[in-house]
Length: 185
Image (cartoon, rainbow, N blue to C red; front, side):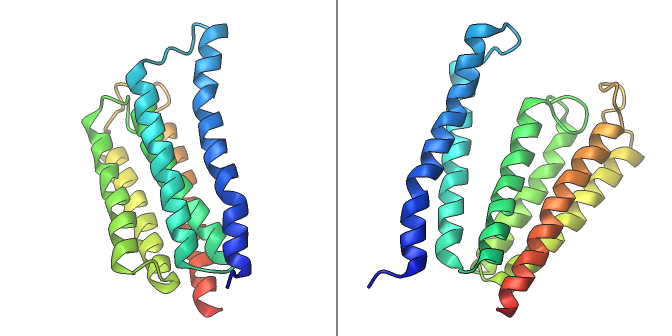
């Protein structure tokens, strides 16, 4: 018997993957019109792997929970992890992308993925996991600012660290609140 949730997932499945494929074509098209965008084959492979992992993670989370709050929280969580990796690879949060201090953010990614697995993707555990990710995100930014990491490399220091931390912390906290709400339904 097909449930409404199954039918909804099947309807969105091709759109999700088509959207990811369309995103991957944007830099290829941009390269034809501007010298500002210069991607190599490895850039396309890395982005393709990241998009496939994000789409797969989102689909997996959709199977793990029901309800709008859970789905929105899942989308924000997956996008937050994707955004954190993408920004670090592209330009870096702490100084440039080559600054080793950016590797501290791997702890946030490990917290989200590890916590989700430990929680078996159940909403209450996911809420705690995302709250821990928010705290860790802020702690890493505080260490970077206090330690003046990246201050020599970036003209926007520490605005870039504070701004990116604010955005990502918002993702984690909103996701945590939505997962908590999903756990009560």
